[in-house]
Length: 612
Image (cartoon, rainbow, N blue to C red; front, side, top):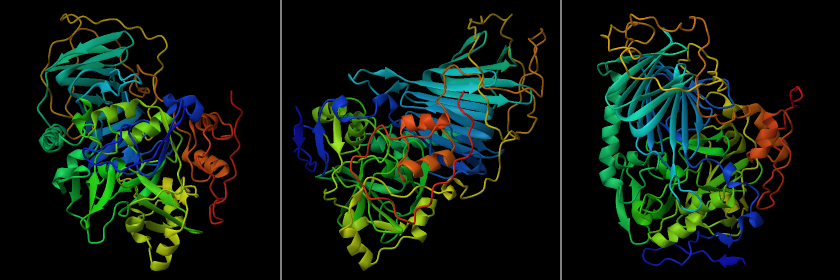
């Protein structure tokens, strides 16, 4: 039986019995009857945000072979690679986790899902702050265990208990030092299984690995950054812990740039205090293309992450306010917000232009990328305000499908529609330089149809560096992962004969000015290390996510099958294997007109070898 629910605006103390979404129509039905994508193939509910970049910090996105200057608020996902030059620092934030990076670090996000955060550290130093190792509950509401894994050339580090862990990888002598300040970690690899507990530091040398117990060394600039950022995060919790989930990426920045005020309709609302006159959401930044979501908004303000990937915007008493999702305690435990690339609606503005506006309170987000009914329900229920615990709990677990409603009335359409030249949109140019809304265009947009996605494919300019990198890794090639075949895991006893005692530290040497020097080699013989010119593949325990096809390959197939819409999971697999993408397994929710003639023609496919 199918139930039709007419949406209502959420108001404090007056909620419908079933969770509803704005002006959209919800159809509650069995998943197999309404959905074309398995929940297991949904996009992840979290990303890693570039929250800080001091000095020379470079980014090589998945599917691109060129480094560019890292950009604040850029969302990272599986396959993205970050390089932090000497005397430079960076921070990545994700739900329940923060990674601070420095001292020539070459770090790849090997996998990033709701439950797994896997990093590949080829060289340099990182500090990993794990606050929560739980994963989102399963379909039955049961809690699940998450995992944090750091792969290095000398072994795999698995976080066993939340805490503070530093990992230093030294290519000069083929060693890795693991320092645990709190929590615990397990280091594994071929013939290796070693636990490192609180206030312990161990050095792993060569392959096969020799283990040495070492003394923690004095703090450096990376440690100072870690302490500073962690103190700021903890200080912000006392201000926002009643109305913002601790897993909401970027929420800790809001207190320094705006003010919270209660609303009888929407609970606590955040108002930015540093915006210019006439400012509106999704107008100060640019679009980029990040698979599997496709069109992704990058806000220019330093605080501009959480309010543009979670919650909703509304105009109250002459100023814009941001409404987070359900308060953390509404479910008895924090409601994990699901990340969205941009919470907007696209409008058909005519030939040569692209237009959009932000979603308002209670209005459903309808993804332009492939997603299951379960995902669509969760991305809305975790980002729309409600204090009704029963409503939130039942809606989170409910398998519903949001039906595209081209006739919906949206509260922000008149006040905050942004229009840019289609060529600027497709190239990812800054919106402020090309935005144009005059009376004639505004009247045209008032009657224009709502679109499921922009009818233009991103151009090669979107993947090109907007700002050239000022530094790249000594080895520009992406790190290679070691095979798991033949791995033998055995415990290494902690007796002095196997684990060498601590040795005094030496002055730092090598290509990393602040890198802490390894301990001198032990007196007793060690297994032979790799030759200096040998490759240093990363030792992994978890099979990483498959690599994304190149941006050029995806762009060609997107333009051929459905301009402007990201490829679905099966289409991506086809392109990865050298085949044409083929039709989408999840059809569009609504028919849309053919793309404008100004859209770029499809590129001719390059010759490909037949799949093996």
